[in-house]
Length: 471
Ligand code: F0G
Image 1 (cartoon, rainbow, N blue to C red):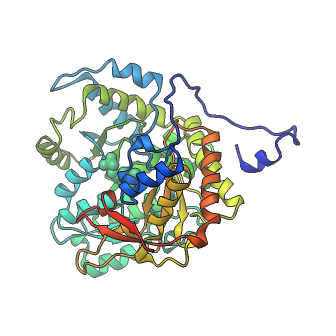
Image 2: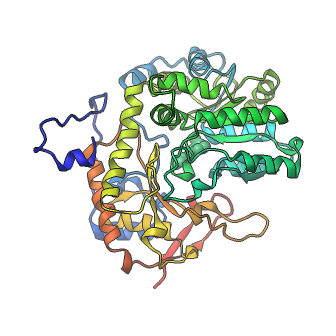
Image 3: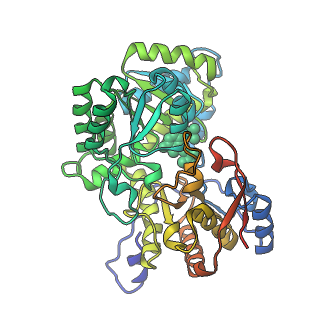
């Protein structure tokens, strides 16, 4: 499924496409409201797509989080929910799935990813410590800060350049790690917060060679590595496709090997693991596990459900198995690539190479005339909704928030609008419609004006901030 094969449709008999490894059993109707209604909805939402009603959205690419379609096996699993307060069968199934596929010894369930981030940050960060990571993620960094830590960006410089085609833009720069350890001392580094496919960099992967070198470095200094495994399956796919020596290895083998270089992981199961709600935290060290198991009962629920119903844990255990099937991952990442290639053919500025879960439109490339404190990515996200009812998400100055020390906007190098593709939900025709909508907005770029922020929440402001157009 590529755009070049589309263009030659009917002319080339040797054309061979691939297709999704599933067929559709239940459908959910969607429809587009007219342009006047979209304009009204956008104004009521303060030009923030998080504040739109989903009934007013046509194609919803706000997030790939909790928006996947479950399989018939997962729905059947929901009926097998053992809704016991303690010791549910489904917990033991989930625990075994995490152990089998990710390889860690001990698992604590949580209601979603940020629940796990909270427990890990409170347990493994001492106030004043640094937490190096391969680019920030919004909730992850906030939990580091709430625990008294300071996030330090140690991703390679290439990650901050949307046009740099490095195959592993998620890699950690070991010289930056060395400089941090020299500056603050290894004892003041809480752990490395390593993400598989880096969300804010455009869904870019980390190579196996990089995590192996990072492990060696951390072993020399006695520093732990915890993995944000939220989209690590997609990272494993990129290793299989791009790194020497992995072409004949399965996604499952690559995933487990990668995790083996880390001390533990946390998971927003709403992404890779194909469920609508859920998360987990898994570590090898028993004492750390014991501390996490003590804390989970305070904030999430008993250590054998952690905020999930039994049926949620069952769907998750099955989702973990389905998530690593090679055909599934190929079609999932392939659909993202299909949309990316359509846009690249039209020379629309996007983050390259195309990442695992989303297309990231480069708003600075769309609107060089809009200064960053007039929120170009927020503008682009709003324009796209207005044109076509397609909902994306701002991932630029608004998401980056303010520096807690200076109070200034952070002005990230990447000013992006993300179009995240839910797993197993939309078809190729939906992707064509999205590409044409982006093209229309791109063609109108010169007439487009900036936004002013008129309401700003203190934490994670992008969720609820409100804007008004600058006339
Ligand atoms: N880590 C990463 C890399 C994430 O992308 C997210 C969520 C989380 C942690 C937190 O997990 O939402 O289950 O509490 N990302 C969503 C997104 C919200 O749209 O990218 P959560």
